[in-house]
Image (tube, rainbow, N blue to C red):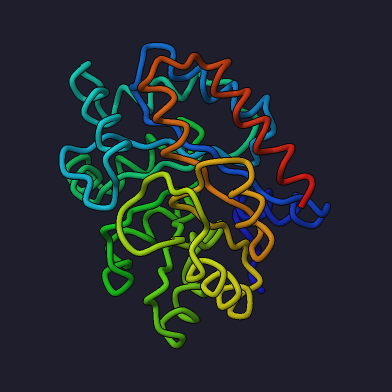
Length: 261
């Protein structure tokens, strides 16, 4: 197998230590102290950190992430501001940005890749870029040093899932449920089935997201996968006034639950 990029190599190494992987999310620009959230996540035991780049038409995002994006955009933040702020963030773990193709296209594929790498970004998630159109971006990102993470859903057919897992880099992002992001009170059966299918299809780290709202749900999701993304629950706390320290404390609770898996 070809050498893995730094994001995937890092996650594989931590998985190899018997650790379940934790990737918390923050909306870039949500509060002036949002870079401190990145540092708090890292200190609380995150294995990588996902930063959302706000977009005006976030088709994959549920009400909480949409609201977080709207608040961040209303404060005047933009792609350039977020990448600039990340240059000074104290993370110590790989950073993954999640945004939409329109923003990257208008920035310019090469320019975005260059500026993202300079900001410490090692992975990107573009949920509205179909796998069939991946070649307009992926080679540019790969040359710059960015691993493109692909998403699989419960509706992804087996043959397509195998191809998707082969083409994904860094990790494969499993969508726990049908629909948009958001907090849920229980783990759907479709999530367990999808995680099992993905683990059979690939040795690449399989990380499940969408609807992980508590340490208990994170632990349940990680039983059948390599780890979890936690997003909406954290951003709901943030919108309700939580400080970086508060968010870090919640991530530490999730970390402790995963360590008991």
